[in-house]
Image (cartoon, rainbow, N blue to C red):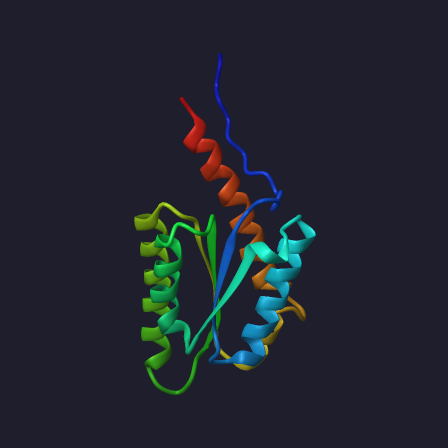
Length: 159
């Protein structure tokens, strides 16, 4: 058997990345950014190859992610933010629409667009997922971006 297998490599050298981050819930979002930047640079990314794009909130992330993905300047787009449940149904709409927009952007653009928007019931859970007890989901999103760029490049070369 002559089966081709594609596995993503975790090398961020020469990968151009846009990080779209929501300012809302900035205490959490900034920790996610710190984790993503740490992951990218530890895996070989040059700071000059990383662009931070700040938007008001998670609902606005898909728009900026789509513009970045379609610009042709980036190999991946990482979306970071925090949607924390409150006492109104607003959480459900923002969480669902931001996730849907990120997924649609990835599928329609052909660029890996990674959903690192965390959704939690309270601030404590959000802080845990941004680097205290549950790891840093910004780091995880950056690692997924690195791997998906590698997978995307390899698939493009298959004959």
